[in-house]
Length: 232
Length: 289
Image (spheres, each protein chain N blue to C red):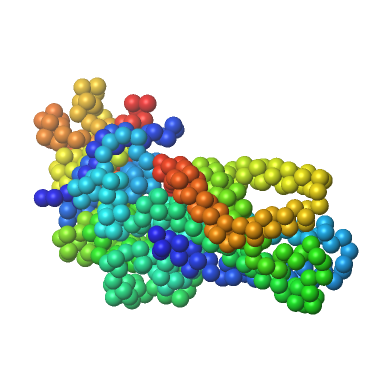
């Protein structure tokens, strides 16, 4: 299975580097420009958070898209691997990509702050530490992981469309919730909550997520993929 | 004699196409040609063997074991040649090899380099710049470098020029010097099959018309030619199909001795080629509606 995970990174190494560099550069430029402009900062930082989540989510689908384009599932199923291994490897490489994407954004943010000689806004202080980014990552993994069975069932195009509708509903719900409280206060409250529970709490969340994935979404995807006709 | 491949009562329904009770056996150490016109079901059978397509019923055994229960073990011993390696076209053969090789415990770099040298394949050129022949040779080099015992090839010679096709067929013949190897080779180019195959399985509209040794096929079938006066409803029964023209008839018989008894020496008997067999079976199927 390790080979299945590595093959994507071997084949698409350049594409991965380009995507991560783009995320890093986008974060740096956005933060540097936003912080320097000093206007409408709260709204623009909220927009930044949304873009971070959506762009990382898109990058995590890179290998799914490539597999669909090149029809490589049929090729790799004919190698000495099982379909279950293929499904699990797709999950793992997708989560690794998500982790890399958030890391690129995180360091992009830090560079933007350095260019501006400081955060310059109290609400954005939490973005300087890794805790918020880890929590964002876990939340996105939890949310996205339940989109994977859709891809295995319907393919990238239809599955992607169904998932986009779900994603849109969540974004609308999120934006709606912002009417009731300042969003930066909400984020700070979540971070404070996590800090109170220390790293052990975060580790517990991670463990719950892993159990949720390995006993729910992954077996479901494997079952859906098991009887799928490939290369037809 | 052990069997590398045993297929029995394999069925698959796609709605607009059905594979119906396909059964045949490939003994170890032989080449089997899977022939039939386009849409006969050859590729579906191969994809089922490779577990790319799920069967509705029937059994597929590889090396004496169920192909799904022992999937990984079986695939380690199989070399699968695609019609063209049209995936990851931006990669060079060297990089593609680095992706494929780690999947096989018995990958042999010396064999790979030997095949690359023998086929004169450029290692560092992107696959998208390869000719069809070069792409096919690459596919074969990748499929044969892990000491595969069973080589499955789906239309390997289609679209190749005659020189490369001949090279490919010579290569397959040489490969069979190793008696442990078996090859399943699908093609609608019957002359290729006639040159290399020991066994022939002829498929038509999702069914197996026959599966037997090449010699048995040669003995069983004959092309019969003669005057139209020899053909009537009674004599027609002894032919797979007959076509008549202004200068006489031409028909395919699958019972040469019986046909000779009926028509005696009034007709001319010629060896039927696989193309003749395919052609007349097609006429028969059309006539049956």
